[in-house]
Picture 1 (cartoon, helix red, strand yellow):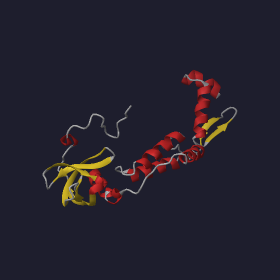
Picture 2: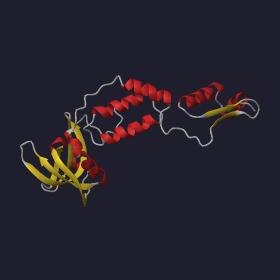
Picture 3: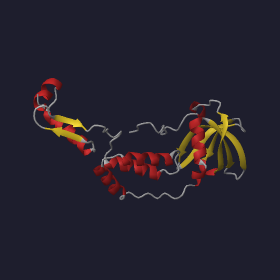
Picture 4: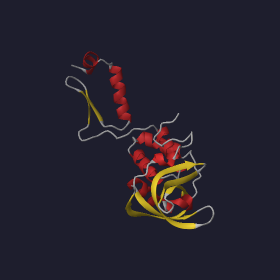
Length: 212
């Protein structure tokens, strides 16, 4: 039975749909083979696999631009590395278009003073371990504090680490750019939650939110 005979009767969609989907797979770089005549058909080359994700050139560049424009954001270095992995597995045509389009998007990204301390803050947050900070407040006073990281927050162009300060025995906001040194200790956090930080601003949302 040919594909023209089998598709509409057995699977209830048209030959045109099948051909369109096969063409899309070929454009994505999938190694599709075809064999005409009785017993023929289409298939994926033995040992081949489909890419784990498929983006348009515009979507890939949108991710690049977002990561490049937010160099001070938590996990931004890891985000850039993850985006590059996605770009690397795009089909050659889409990757070439993305790289060409990316050359038309410029970002002013001066060196960030927080990049030396951010890995420790990121690790402490992810592993929920106490971080030891050397912190200079706006008043100019410098202290060393043990902080249980609870939340990263961005407001008015500034990133903050919000955590339970063991010296003050209270929740405190620490401007990330004012943290001079940071190290992760072996002490586990006590389990303070985001709810203890208080109500977020009306326009604030977690980064996994889909937004309008």
